[in-house]
Image 1 (cartoon, one colour):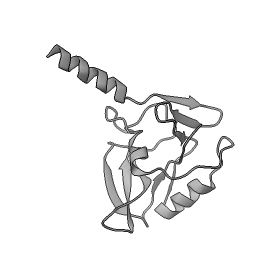
Image 2 (cartoon, one colour):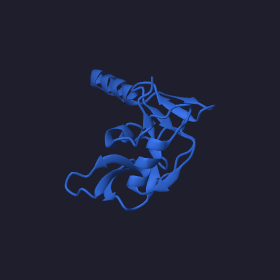
Image 3 (cartoon, one colour):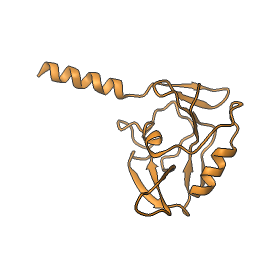
Length: 139
């Protein structure tokens, strides 16, 4: 029983993301995945507007930003937190839905949204407005 508890604790600790923040550029880096996340503002828009916004974004002298896919966006959810359900290293975050670039397989005019109030995922019509958080591959 002790061994199972220690393994569970070890796995839980390893699953917690390790983030660092560059306050000068308003970029948060996930030190485990290498992904860099925009953290300079929270903006709400349609799915296509979000894709265009990220592709046009220049932040920290980088211009290779994009809308994250569903798994990438889910990787910054912290299930131990609520409202918002992400690391406190993110300073510009709304406890609401954020678009992913992943289209819902059954309905092409829907895409996946990650809700950072509770960390849950759902699909929604691409014409509706949700928040956008851009990502880049990092170094």
